[in-house]
Image (cartoon, rainbow, N blue to C red):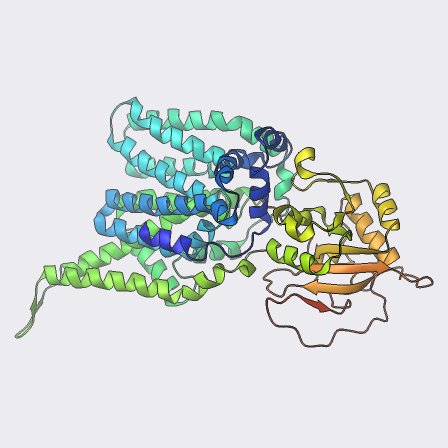
Length: 540
């Protein structure tokens, strides 16, 4: 737990929220009635988490406080994984399992994110430990703690439900008597009944995960590498070998293997018909991998501890060998963590997240003049202004008709296409905040308001300036200044491939060297866009 706490606190204030975190930040600061209204139309799956964070952020609304619940949850999970290892295979395996969980890069990533996934992982680990206690206990009351923790976990995020399948397989592998099955069945049934209203409401909001795709074997490999203390090289292959050895520890394998395989397997299978899978949705399954790694290492250590070296001058008994093995285990864990330091360090940069809304706000603050109109493409880009309003306080949102809290939406309600055309017709310059792919002229957004934005920009404006923060991972977030097209300059009927809307065909290409990283800079408007799908900054 100490290792996990230190790892999670390291670089916690990375200087910027990304889209999903900003949703947590701005929704949790609304009133409870406003949050309740929002959940009727969007993000019902995160309702309990938003209400919890409403209480947390009431203490102090800040980025560090936003992430502290995830830090605490990850720390608790490391302790719970260790407790599972102790119960299943002894103190040494428990200690190694907890430390392995703590130093895995995927754990550190979500321990520093203002979303519910680390809390769900803690709930699943706690429910699994309570399941073992209930199996070893007597009477019907032993199932109440298990059912309560599991119900809260599944309400926190409904995609934790597949853990019920993992626990059912665990009971089958442990060959428990009928009384245990009866107690577990009642608890599982109560959880399922409690979740039915949430599932029913969230089905009507399934458009939020329309960006997901059916996972293939490449996603299986990616998940395996994410669940390893090291995603490549000897650490990864050594982890797989130790997992195979850990399968020989039957009681540990009966708990760890279903937890590791069943939830991802269920979601990947369902996603072949209706995509619902993402690695973060099964973060809680990582505990199974850590337990198997530690069980394999414990079995190897146990075998070495029974070795006796006898010779004319060397006589080493089992106790000394066990001490050497213990020290070697500590060194192996230390070396594993140090080998992944570049991964951990990179993950603590705001540039390693899908977007850095603080950087967008800083660009706006340095470039916009008082009263300048600003247009967000798509409207979800308004999250930058909601999370960091300081950079946009001098500008006016030209498309916004009703604010996010008043409209019970995530980023506000915009005017109709006709209203938007009239508003843009009254200005000679407008700043546009957008991901580069959102301005790809080959895009045809399904939303008529978004189509109107692109059409009006292409027909009536040209690009005067473009500013971009170079610390990108997936897509540039641009700040572009569009000015009214000069009289007589007729826009092309069909925008050329690779040319942003509003850029004339005769514009010279940008040839100057790229600027230093992390520095806001202006570049030529003909900088070619990166083709890509419509961005989805908010993913539940």
